[in-house]
Image 1 (tube, helix red, strand yellow):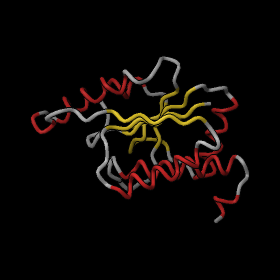
Image 2: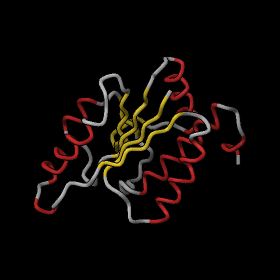
Image 3: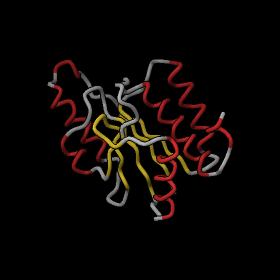
Length: 157
């Protein structure tokens, strides 16, 4: 199985980049991992939030295929404990999911078209995080899930 992680815009926060890169290096020991950064929409201040989401959505939808299993990281998604998230990923592996795609939207979330394309939504917390910092948090949880699947001690540290 391949895991693809798609997000909008580069980050200028070094601690986010460093945290994400650290976990990305660990994740690739368990699965194929593909990272896609969608370029920010130009002149977003001149757009309504709906128009911005629509433009970002068009870019996102071009990066996924019809066979991808798409999961939006979304405040209205399903919550899991780390162990249940690991079990969910393991089920996707058993079901021979070829490409499991996780997407972080922009600052205003997702367009209606992206919501319609999604197979699932995942909420990482009841708290709200910036669309940039969630990258490092999600990468850590993905690494944790694979370490749980493999029965390694990271989860118990």
